[in-house]
Length: 171
Image (tube, rainbow, N blue to C red):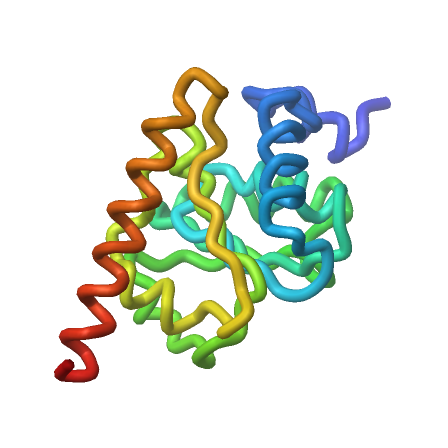
C-alpha cells in the first residue's frame, strides 16, 4: 500500500535531496556564516533550496513563490514530508511589498531563482528593507569558472544598492 508521502515523492521531478540543492545550500551556509535565525527565499520555484537550508541548519525559512500553482505544489510536497509549518512556510506574491513584512527581520536572504543565472533579484530596495542590519544576502551559487561573473553581478547589485540608499536619503 502506497502512502501519500510515497506518491508525492514519486511525482516530484527531482529526488527529495537533489545534489545541486544540497551543494547550493551548503555553499550558502558557509558563505553567509548563518546557521540560525530567519531566512527569506525570494522568488522560489519549488522551495527545494529552502528545504535543503532547513535540513542543513537551524534556519526557519519564508519561501515566496511568484507563481500561485508552484506555491501550492510546494506546500503539498513539504506537508507530505513533514516539513511545512514549523520550519518552512510558503507564500505567494509577485512583489515583496505585497507581503507587508516587518522591516529588517531576515538574517539571510536567498533566491532559488538565481541558482541558475547568478543574477540578484530585481528589487534591491525591497531586499534591503527585509534584511537585518547584520544579515547576509547570497544570490547564486556558481561554479569556480563562473566566479568572475558572480563577483560582477554582486558588485553591480551592491553598487545599485548604494545608489538606492543615496537616492532614498537624499544624499
